[in-house]
Picture 1 (tube, rainbow, N blue to C red):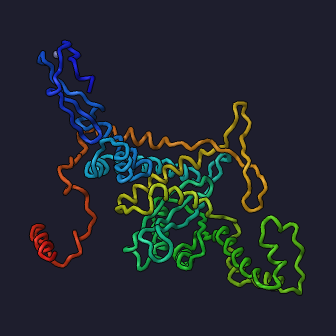
Picture 2 (picture 1 turned 30 degrees about the horizontal axis):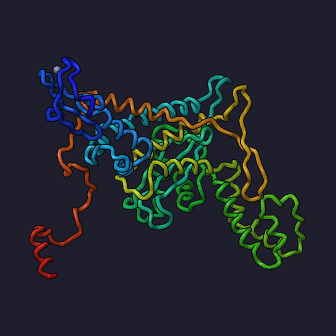
Length: 432
Ligand SMILES: [Zn+2]
């Protein structure tokens, strides 16, 4: 507070009793008056149409990096920094952050769709061959098995690996948690076809309800099965069978590095018969007919890890919160998957690194990629600032904790209303 000892205008002293400090969220304000009669208020952060800019920035940057209000609050408490409260955070989120995410997401998706439409347009010259969209689809549920509450079904363009759509399904919308995946698939595909996508082929896992749906409702679209999931399942079976007695030779065939050195199986051996029975499995042979394009959904796992970053698992979010967080994940993924180029040295040579392979213990070479970029976050911050400057945008200033958005649930599970606190306290005391 040594800045407020003398007046900057006339040099007169400012008495300590004439300096008042207070906070608006993360912004410090100092009201002062000098002995010469000058007075003013100093602010640690500028205002944007009456709202401290630092409050707007704190809320925006925690959400846009996939964090939560709890994290922001705990971080600032540990630093002993003043911070906005939960009601202000939610009011800012509702008025400025969610609408900004939605606007930028729609804008980027329209650009992506425009590219797809241009490629799928009928060929009019040899320079631009027609290319119909080929999609990959897979689900990620918030917890495995039957206890999942939310499920995301995402669609990826096979050529660029960009996410073109994601569908959020709540367990209450489906008859059971396992039915969330086909439900998300159906709803998402309907949206994509409704927008005018001329889908040529779509690769998914071998879920019975999805294959039935494709066969009956969309015979015009080629349905492929994800070869990655199938190969993983096959290897798992092979490994478990090869653990049995007299299967030593077969075991060699399940270890990637040894395959080339492994001896051929004799046609009268137990190992050979086991391998033959697995390879000639009727269902696998039938399904192989739908794996000829060798499409795999492995890249969707990359996107699922982005989803996880923007939706920490321990935290509960509203449907709207989940939706906007999944749009953040899409913007992050799409910005980086397309531009991910190998890094180069100052002389232009491609950069590599040495990595020890976990399984074989040998050293191998891997590409070094350019660092990820986050231009979408800077654009979002600009949009938030512009929305705050617009006097037509409604902002409901929080007045009390009652303004906090409540989930659509009864306030408590008790069958009778709560008695007055004093009464309960008296009852409690009389029992002691
Ligand atoms: Zn003065």
